[in-house]
Each structure stands twice: as structure tokens, then as C-alpha cells.
Length: 362
Image 1 (cartoon, rainbow, N blue to C red):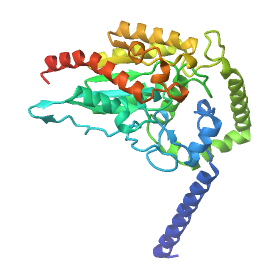
Image 2: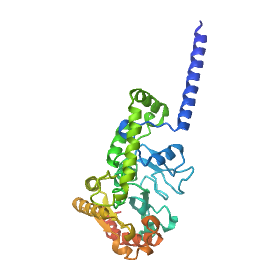
Image 3: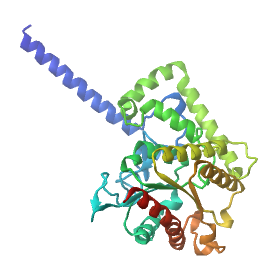
Image 4: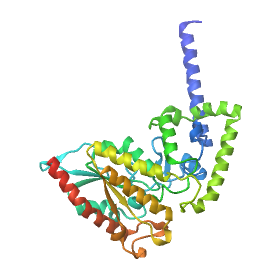
């Protein structure tokens, strides 16, 4: 056999193998195959939501850095999602000067109460804060249903590149105290980081890699055990979730209160070392949605902020006693609530920004 015919045969076999791999990958994606390492085989959000995210039928998608993040396009995607997952336009990464000075930059990290996904863009805290503060650049990176652990992972993996002067973080404990699915956020994020390093590696993205992981697990019975464990765990957590607002609840929370306090302290110390101011913002729930345990989380955030020298802003006084004026369904801030919190934040941030300008000559 000539060298040319051997080369032709090799090329043909390689092409057939490539086509088989592409077809297999497509078929496995259509089947929704997903088999991560053992520590991540429980639900990331919930069993149903995980399936919807893998199928592209959810407003969020799986994310190798923070477990999940909002989709920027496709069915159910929110309008205006930026590359960080927040809502609203981002300034350029590189800090540029205008009229002889560089505008100060503020990052907004938080959950749904700061994101304002149900409101028009101009009614959200980010837009109103920019209007009140004037010559500043805002980096919106608040995401619905994000915990403090996810917010810190997002900061370290993506948001830090915007090099802000100040970070406003709103994680008041209502997400963190909720019943966990498949383990707490701190453990899941640690396992995810060990698996992916925060990037969409081939082992994470390719379903063929998941199939290669599944095959030996199926032969050993570990696959069946993992499915049974995930199912029983989800059933147990669903049954116990109704009482998670009490201090005495024995279930697994997304972040235990000691993890939550330690994360605030570590985050505050980390920003302080980088010369970045931290403002911890607490937004209370309406009385009808108030959970006793959240007060414990609020105290933990306050103590951690105090210990690390960060500012702590409690929005209760600004919002007022009549929750019907500032809250909407599910206890989220309505348009009036965003306006009141933006006014309070602008008042609290003004002296901090003035001090930063004086120190840096900005």
C-alpha cells in the first residue's frame, strides 16, 4: 500500500471519527446527559431547574464559576443582561480620564432586591444612583437568587477586572438562610472550582467527557447510588424547607450563619488590602415575609462589617413602616423601594466618594 493511499485512509478514518464524536456530542446534549464529579451530583438549583437550564429552557444557564448565571439570549432570558450577569450597561474595563480626571467606579453586587429585574431599567437602584451621584461609573453585577458565596466568587473571577473604587454588596441573608439543594453553596462552589478552575474546560463542557465519567460509575453502581441520594436528599429538603425561617431548623442552609459571617469578614479584609471601600447594604423584608433567622444574618453582617472596617447601611429607616408602599410580591423592592434605597445610598456614599477623591486626587 502506497504512502498516499495510507494517508487517504487515515484521513477518512479521522473524518469519520470526528463526525461520530460530533454526532455523539449532539445526541448526548439532546438527551440532557450531565454527570459531574461526585461532590456536584446533587441539585445545583433544583432537579427541575437544572434540567431546564441544561435544555436551554430557563432564564439561567449552568456556569463553571458561580454554578449558574442569567442567560443573555434565548427563551426566557431577561433583557439587558451584561457579561457579568447583572442588568444594565457596563463601562469599559479600562479606566479612562475625562476633563482631566478619572471618574470613580462603583460595583453593585447583590441578589434580586438590588438587581430589580422586575422593574424598568430607569426605575432600578443602579440607574437612580447614577443619576444622584453624577460623575461616577456604575458596574451592575447583582443577580437574582445569588448568595454571598456566589457574589464573592463572581467578584474574584470576573468583576474584579473592572477595578472599582467602591463595592456596594447587598446580601441580607434571605437567600443564604434558605434550604439548600444538594449541599450548601460554599461546599458546592469549592467543588466546582476544584473541577473547572472557574473556566468552561473540556471536562465541564463536553458531554462525551460526562459519558466517560458515567460509564465506570454505572458499572460500579455509583450512578444509581448518586441518583438515589440526590432524590432522597431533595425529598428531605423539600419536606423540611417550610420551617427554615426558624433558628432551631435542623436542615442544611445555602450558607450557614457562621459561613455567612466568615465570608463577609474575608471579603471585607480582601477589599481593604486592595484599597477598595466596601459598603454592606441590608434591605429588610416586609413584615408579612419576615423570617426570624434573617435577623441573625443581619447581625452577623453588621458585626463582620464592623470588624473589617467596612460601612454598614440598614435601609429600614429609609423604607418606612408601611411595606405596601415599597414592596412587591415575594417581598422584593418595588419602584418606590428602589427610589428610597437609592436616595439613602447616595447620601451615605457621598462622603465616602469625597474622601476617595481627596485621597487619590480623582
